[in-house]
Image (cartoon, rainbow, N blue to C red; front, side):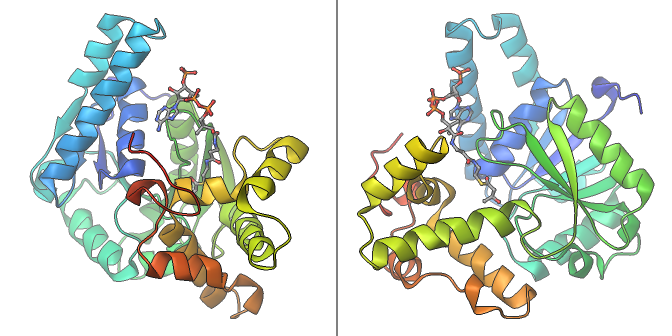
Length: 290
Ligand code: 3HC
């Protein structure tokens, strides 16, 4: 499938960490990108963060000043869902709540062209349930990006029971066009990435709770011994401890309430105390802002 990015507008819904990274990646690949979030403040912050990163890349001579201007010109903030109507692909990266996602997708379905693709960046929610309220569930697909999106190569492409071959093929082509490597998986809670990653992170918390070692030692062992760029506890802070807890819960519910997917008490206690990781400045570790 040949894609001319200039004529393939993409809407990114939700401008938190993931939406921000997805928008930057799509704009860098040449797509006009519309950004929408219920909080306009959040969208402004996302655009500022992207501008700062592009500035850094220009100073490091990774991109030219002209390229930076082109990328920024491709990004346009929007104030309402209605303004996303020209999008041929919508990538949703909003709160991990099934009903809210269903509601937004139903509204989008009536606004967008009949062949527009509805992609969700959900990290674990059941795509079949998400599509159950749609008139055209064959256009719904999972497009699971990884943080930091401009750096991480993978897009985990999730096929729901109703996702058409045409939608899957277009999503694979679009991911490649955005400079990513798509790999497909079927619709099980946690898909492949979080099904494998999250129990490993959870086990690191159990090891800490059992006194096997302190967090720094656990992370050093996994970094130096298994060549991970970050140890599992550092990565949990980076992802967000609330996100890790929620993904474990979705897997617990979605995979026959198998107790091996229950979040560790350490994660739950840190989240309950408001220590969510990098974003709050405190998680397993203390973090300095920025
Ligand atoms: N956005 C854009 N670019 C970023 C970035 C960000 N948030 N953070 C770092 N980068 C870029 C830097 O600019 C730098 O680019 P350059 O080489 O062109 O100058 C490059 O990444 C390397 O950054 P640093 O030198 O600052 O730091 P590191 O070499 O330590 O790399 C890291 C940082 C890329 C975050 C690395 O530690 C890493 O790969 N960590 C693991 C990340 C991971 O596992 N992510 C997946 C999480 S799971 C997930 O997202 C799924 C969800 O469902 C939970």
